[in-house]
Structure formats: structure tokens, C-alpha cells
Length: 282
Picture 1 (spheres, rainbow, N blue to C red):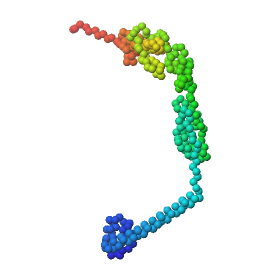
Picture 2 (cartoon, rainbow, N blue to C red; picture 1 turned 60 degrees about the horizontal axis):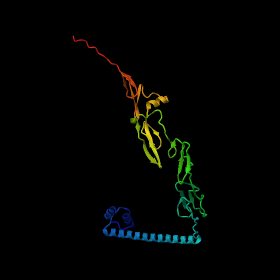
Picture 3 (cartoon, rainbow, N blue to C red; picture 1 turned 90 degrees about the vertical axis):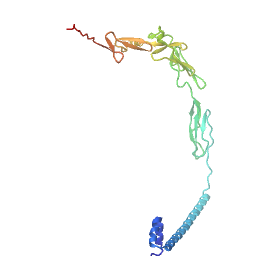
Picture 4 (cartoon, one colour; picture 1 turned 180 degrees about the vertical axis):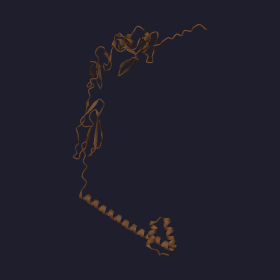
């Protein structure tokens, strides 16, 4: 049997526990194995003591270095910038005025920001950029009134004064005082009430597809558009190969006798009538 030795202790330390015990039991008796374990415990305790002494020495040196730096270079007073105010009709975001801190500015709806939207506090105690201001945006600067309308400024709004024959918030609708020649006016089946809604305190009316609005802004009616006549007036290609029939809101094509309407709804195709002569019975 081998006597207890650092080699046995090293095996016990390096190998997995079950493998080390199995290996050492084959080489050592119980007393020798316990002696090896105690040797390893003493070894680790000595290492732990030396490690703790090393850590304590490093901490002492760091403390001494910190004290030396503190005495050699005292803290400088923190630099700050003057306080900033939100512009009239605007808002400010940011409450810290130390170096490298940012302050942001925006304007209320209807106002335009003039100056810097963001300012940064510098190391010399001054702000970057220019002082922001909120300027009122002219509602008529975009020329919203159409067809010769005159724009009148109001409080956060505008109003268009429309010339004759034009109506709407922006003078965008033409006022019809008389129905056009191609509308159907003498048949109630070809008339509809317009669909109206108030938008921005102004009444807006519209007609269904195939109908045209006529009358005044206060008393309007939707008259049928005679598509057959419109295409004749415009010189456009014919809607139908043969006959065009106007119906409320639309039209349909018809073919003369001996012809059938094709799938496109406007072309006609002739058909042959075959007559079989059947003689008298034999």
C-alpha cells in the first residue's frame, strides 16, 4: 500500500468525487485516505488565507489611490445654463439645464416655429441654436379659395367669398341655375333627390351615378343624364351599334328585327331563319 502523499491529495482534488474515492480506496486504507483528505483541507485553508490577504492588500491600495486623486484634483463645480422659457403659443420639453442636456420646443396648431426646435447646454454655460418663436400661420397663404374666390382671414380660420355661379367652402362647386340640354326634366322617373350633408358648416350635395345636379344651392334636384345625347354632342364613338335607349341613371342598346344583342351589350349580330319544306306523306 502507498503511504499518504500530496499525489493522493491531488488525485482526490482533480478527479470527480466518485472516481477519486474508487481509485484511492484501491490504493489506500481508510486511515491513509482520511489523512490525505485532511492534508488537502489544510492546503485549501492556507490558499484561502493567502487569497484573502491579497484581496485586502489590493483594497487598501485602491483606497490610498482614491484619496490621493481626491486631494490632487478637487471636484470642479458643475456647469449649468440659464433657464429657458416656452415661446408664446408654444410648448417646452426638458427641465434640466446641465451640460449636454437638451430642451425641445413645439408650437400650437396654426403656428409655425421660427428658430431652433432643439437647444443643447454647452460646457461654457451657453445654449446652442437660436431662441424659438411661434408665428401665426396665415390661413390664406395657401390660396384655398378656387375659381376666383376671395379669402378672408378669421380667428384660426378663413372664409371664401365666392363669385357668382360658384359655391362651397372653397368655391369649388358650380351653382346650376338651369338644367343642361342633355338632362331629362319632363319625366318624374328621371329625377332624384340629391344626397346632402353639412361639412364645415357648408351644405354639400351630390347625385347618384348617371344623374346631374341642377337648380340652386338651396333648392337642387338630380336630373338624369341622357347618355345617348351626350355622346352625340361630344362626337364620341357611338354607345350602341344600332339603337340607344335612355333609362334612369343609365342606358341600354337594342337591335333591329332579325338581330340579337351580343354579350358586350352594344353589338348586334344577325341570325338566319332556316325553313324546311316537308312534302306530303308517301
